[in-house]
Image 1 (cartoon, protein in one colour):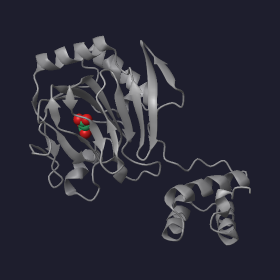
Image 2 (cartoon, helix red, strand yellow; image 1 turned 90 degrees about the vertical axis):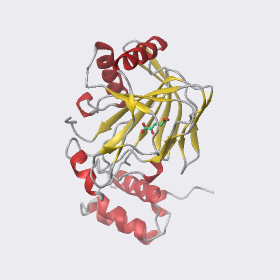
Image 3 (cartoon, protein in one colour; image 1 turned 90 degrees about the horizontal axis):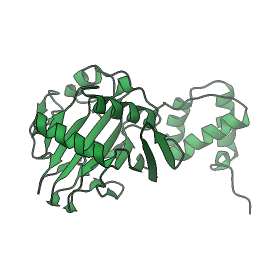
Image 4 (cartoon, helix red, strand yellow; image 1 turned 45 degrees about the vertical axis):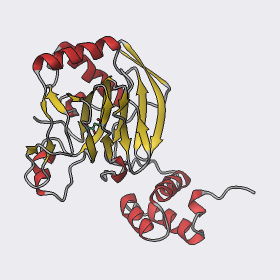
Length: 282
Ligand SMILES: O=C(O)CCC(=O)C(=O)O
């Protein structure tokens, strides 16, 4: 039995509707809305529109560009050969090894310690201010862009790795979790419906990707978890978890909900890199 084309998934009249609307230059985003309000699920609808464009020979790039990891298994960038250990679709994510060398991890920890770490904050949705909250009990130190030659080199590496301009990156930050410390499930995107998000969105638009790099691993606990999908990443020194905070239509991804599980034994140190839609202004 031959497999049904995605365009025929919901019958001949839907096939015709998709092709007719694409021929008439209708906006695929509007089409997608109509389709998902009816019988289509989002992934199928996106694939059917793509297939329709192929069938009518139209080259239209209608997806929103977002940072992404190259398709190859090994990515050689300046001094590192980064290995892609796994890829996920929901949320769009990649588990990476050797983003940083062991020596870089050590140097970053030394530099963070010499600057001093302070209790981490979270963004208050109402005011946009950083506040202390029991949801996040780690300590943090922030760096500015290119604060040292090492930080500059790593930012350039991450920008190339994710195919996203270095100007769109927020300053790196290092977080330390001691025993019992954690970051409860949260999103990194700013909720457009909360008043406190406006001042953050003005400074470079939405957060579009997060890279969590592991600089020191605890002996027990401290995984990065994605409670809606069951993904669980054990800290691996030099490795990283990359994921998109929005989908390729520009919509904040509910599946990007993630957490730093409580450390049970030892110390976990990570470095977080957030990338924005546009150039980031401090
Ligand atoms: O600690 C972790 O593994 C997650 C960190 C995190 O969620 C964040 O920095 O946004």
